[in-house]
Image (cartoon, rainbow, N blue to C red; front, side, top):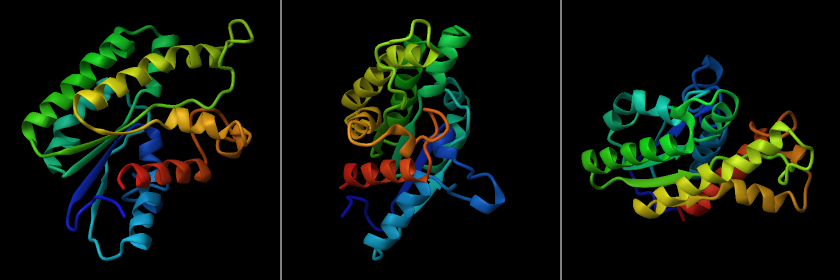
Length: 217
């Protein structure tokens, strides 16, 4: 049983993994990923509750993109709960383009600004933060110059920042990167990431949804 109360609103915001087709006619309004699966879990396990679920994820977003639309796509809804999943695009663009707005320092600064203004505007809001993740097993850059190894070397900086934000703002926290990699000790990563190490399949989204249900229980 989750701590969500009857008639509460939970808003999900983030990048493509949150978006997951939610703007396409056949998948409106929640998409076909973990947000929709979490909604299904609530309907199956807690049918007595009427929970309003909103998805404002947009594919390709960085923390700077969230800042640009924060008032319209987060604050304006005045949700009781706010879930944020962001960071992998920041890491990728920092490595490939080197833009300051995607580096770890900017990621910390903007993330902190967004949570601070949110706490000010909606004092009673409850927050759930989701770590960015990357499924590649090249965790030691075994092949010199391999891009996936570089991502796995840089991503922990972003994950640490999410952890710092969770502590600072007393948020619930899902360590998705860690959870996935613990699972990969028993099952090949392609079971959940058959095409590349960023976007999970339906099984991977179910993995996130289940972790979310536990985090809110």
